[in-house]
Length: 409
Image (cartoon, rainbow, N blue to C red; front, side):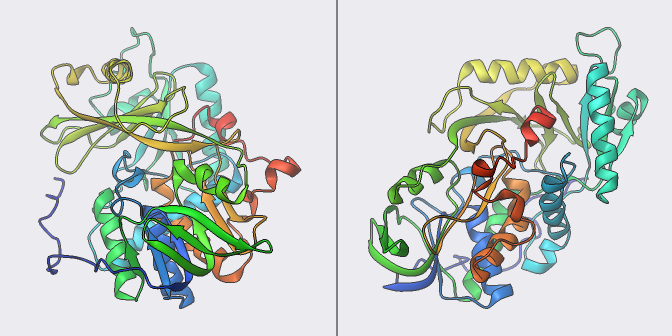
């Protein structure tokens, strides 16, 4: 049975971290207080001993995409570059609760990616074999195997999208997103990192091509290095120094049902029907799909997307026909032509960039925190970040995970 959220939280004071006034200067300023920003600050302090760090968040900590995702964690990507960084992250997930000393409700319940056509089958088997070559747990299961792993999936041959099988990653799963953020924030604060909320960055200061600090709604703050971790608003920040990034921002909508008894044992994803469904620890069904086709920064759901997602879910799970919608929302995701992240240095000295995770940012949280912190501390890309530097859009060495998988959740 799933654990009850909150039942095993450690004793702590009313606040897990202080809410300080910003100091005049820091060694490193991390812009963006979501999962990636908090993880970056944590690993800067823990691994590299850099504790004179401020995380600046224009709203409240982890109130952006970190609070607006569907919490799926997996590493079964096709290309070596993608599987490298996501598998690094998954290994960190597996020890993260002990590392942070805080529960994150990481549940390795497995992820099924369904195949509905012969081309789906070919692509899926190809990905499984590529995963195996990279040491990632992956297997192909037939229709009967899908039914055994998730009995509530409709595997009838008499439907528009018959289930011909699926890829399966047993180590994949979900975690409690706000607990993850609180764990990183609490641990970073304990090591001396300042977590500054309601502090919007309005400008980035440079002298002779070198970053010197940021202008904020709470005054100017000097910095030796500035790291951008602002997801869908990364392009807005980069333009403050005249840097045009090859990405656009889209709303990504998701929804949850009312609370239900435990019935959905794993995570099920389908590109053809285009929906992914899991059951959260409290019991609600968590559903998502692809990004909205238009560009925008809105954080609310819309009826046509709700209708499409629920119709797709019922194609696979007729048992949910009488479930009621509880809540819908949107996050703001940034996407480039190859739908792979950008991690590393920029043309502005000591300005670092972590963005363009599209719909896959949550699963990378500890991995990119570790990799980005190393990149900032050393002034050169970590080995897992080397394929994802900004200059690949000049050299043409793209990591086209979107084209390979049709979707990059």
